[in-house]
Amino acid sequence: MDEILVETLIFLLVGLIVSTIIIYVITKLSREEEGLGTAILAALVGAVIYALAYYFLGEGLLAALAAGFVWWLALGTLYSMGWWKALGVAIVVWIVAFLVGFILPTVVGPL
Image 1 (tube, one colour):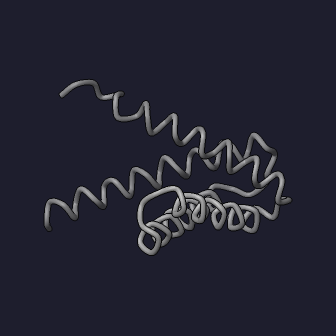
Image 2 (cartoon, rainbow, N blue to C red):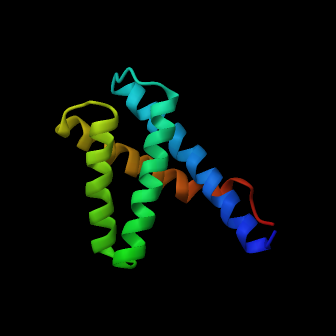
């Protein structure tokens, strides 16, 4: 396999695992009853939504806002929660994901 393809697949897999864990923990803290399967689906749906938004709209604020809005709707639908609760959960997930994304690359230390 091509080295770039392998790196991309590893990046995608690690991203999905981390996103799934974050979504699962945040939704459990907000007293949602759905399990790990729904968190995995939410992470996959989010990855696809963001990939499509960035593909069609390019990088930037518009793509991020459009993808965030669609993912908020998907999250609310997947977890059958109210739209305000889904918005709160989505914002907390984005904040925690940002922090984890900022901290995680530094965990292994300098190479």
